[in-house]
Length: 425
Image (tube, rainbow, N blue to C red):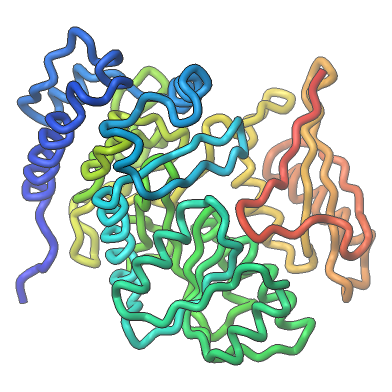
């Protein structure tokens, strides 16, 4: 049987056609890129020619542009009244970016989400529960619209408590859940506490955090949802849905390369070899109303060292999904610490219900303080605290004080978790 997926040559030929189309559409109408590309010949001979000659776009630039030209900035190819959708970033690291989309650009992103559903095995027979509040976050609005278009029953979960959402899932016989990894854990914990059986759930689609591809976090979700398969993907407000989990290899994310020109670069801006970590740089190939050229995402990734995946795809595969954020790395007493590494370590302890990390930069050398909330049924409390400290020492070569707090003390997260805080002068 012939392979149904395109070859590398076919992928790259399609990307070049789409890239040229985007460049033609945004010049000279888009004021942001008209300034940015002034003096640059925008006709490209190859993908390499584009990467060699075109500058990066950064979130800082976009944010500064919106501050100088409120409320939406100048990265708009059309008049504002031609746009129909508004979303914004989470504002985890800085002020939220406001993002507008035309009907055509929105549909382009919805079509990418349909590919995610196809890879996950979701179809019109499924009943999909969207366990989130309907705010300006882009991801689940796209997921909701895509689910409607493939004919699934879409069940919104806005404005409900966690227990009420679980009862709604049970009563509607939902088969699929969309939520963040943190909230998948919270839903599973509350289902156990409330004795709510959810055997109809066959698939939990997670996004918004790296947890779905962090082995210990994934294992924890699988333990809480024993009848379900966990399926990871990732995207960004600025770009749209970018990756989906390989159907045959959990922990591997495929980039939707028909939608994105993708680069993985080191800190000097040069391409890294497969198997080496670098920053994910994306150029969306179908979102010309609010375009991005060579956007530095800040996500650390590592490409799989192979040309064609065992699932048959030649699309770029990322080993371990999103490894962390470049701006999340913290140097503590000479040790580089990523939150995703701490997450993987702490989730290996089923006794941990939740945790918070404070980074204290008020001293000459930064220090980490860890708060742990244990599950209510843990007996040997002091012993667990010692085991956690020892594990951190063995893994990161850091002595981190652990403070135990009472049940229900630490916050739970429906959307992107904010477990790390920084105290500075």
